[in-house]
Amino acid sequence: MTEVTSLTGRLLVASPVLSDPNFDRAVVLLLDHDEEGSLGVVLNRPTPVGVSDILEPWAALAGEPGVVFQGGPVSLDAALGVAVVPSGGERADPDSTPDALSGSGDGPMGWRRVHGAIGLVDLEAPPELLAAELGSLRIFAGYAGWGAGQLEDELAEGAWYVVESEPGDVSSPDPEALWRSVLRRQRSELAMVATYPDDASLN
Image (cartoon, rainbow, N blue to C red):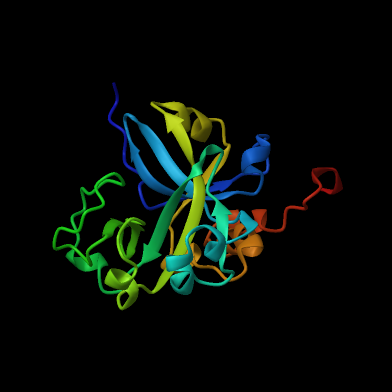
């Protein structure tokens, strides 16, 4: 099997040719990517459900809009917390994975680095453990998952653009505009894709 270059921490931005309605104009933060598969959360699918309605103890730490986001079509009954810890990124273990959430001296207890200052939150932990450290928190219901080689096939078909993430992407106060804003900041022809009309027949 050919070795997979990990895209953990990068963004998948849906290209206009991607036809799956689950991912129309989606911006996905990859939380884990290796030869066994990939897992991420869609950053620009806010729901009408308030964080206070399902995880009241965390509501005060969730950024605006203070709602739960649909992280993807898999396990919609499961919640994932993604948070930026501005001081935590440099001390972290680069080999950490999303299922290893216990604190281990590489950031605050209950937070595990994914990439840079972005990490996963153990939602079973007391929120006050993290309150002083968190720059922002977003709660996701469900996630996006790909089996071994599946994402690579979609990339080869041109379904996704792979770009660098920025900590502010996780907590964008205007998530519906994230697809265009992420594309617009690229220093390449991708910036032009941001002008693609919502109705392809208008192009």
